[in-house]
Length: 260
Ligand SMILES: [Zn+2]
Image 1 (tube, rainbow, N blue to C red):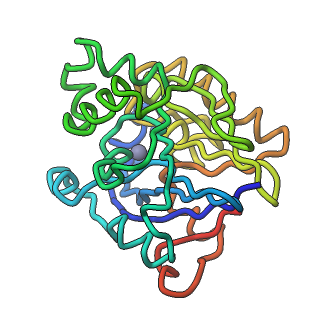
Image 2 (cartoon, protein in one colour):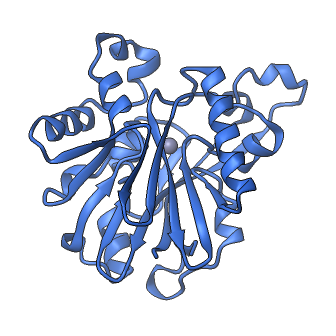
Image 3 (cartoon, rainbow, N blue to C red):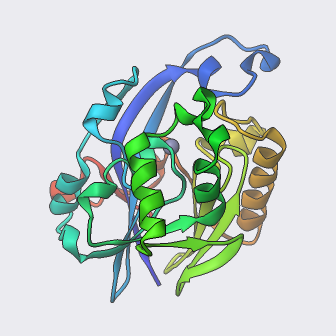
């Protein structure tokens, strides 16, 4: 059984016409859309894990419309978590807003989807429509961690720790992992960027950053199937998460929310 805390470390307001794929197909006026950026802490009686590591101030500064709320080391400290106690970090995919602080956890092992690592080491990944979504330093850190045996890779559908299942999906990124976590309230699906906003699932509306549209729809189907089996779905960038789940209160109460 795991406890899950979502740290809302960043925010953005971007046009809906940018955030949704082929927005013109819906015949709706454009409007601003709020986005939230999360890192998750998973805690059991024995272990503390992180899911993703957010973005760094210097990388968000190059991307208009986004801003940081709290830096990850500070967020962990305010939650009473010693960063050195984190023995493993599950990296859902290689995009810049998920890998930004890996260098701050040199002692932690990494769990990386094999299909994602494979894609980002190919020459085609260097083309701007792909590479603009990653930071070269982070990709190099991840790939060298894999070479050096610090990162273990996950296949299509694997148990990465007791009570944590990782399923690889395509669509948004070539091989990102969706996590199904056993908690006291039942299974929780941390979709990461397989689903950014609840609306994508509810209206079947693909997100704007897409490498394979059919695989993106397939990922939505997979998540809907998990939901139909009783899992609670938590999208990766929806500010609504901070309204549906209670604040942890205390020193971290403004940015940390208890999912389970
Ligand atoms: Zn993201």
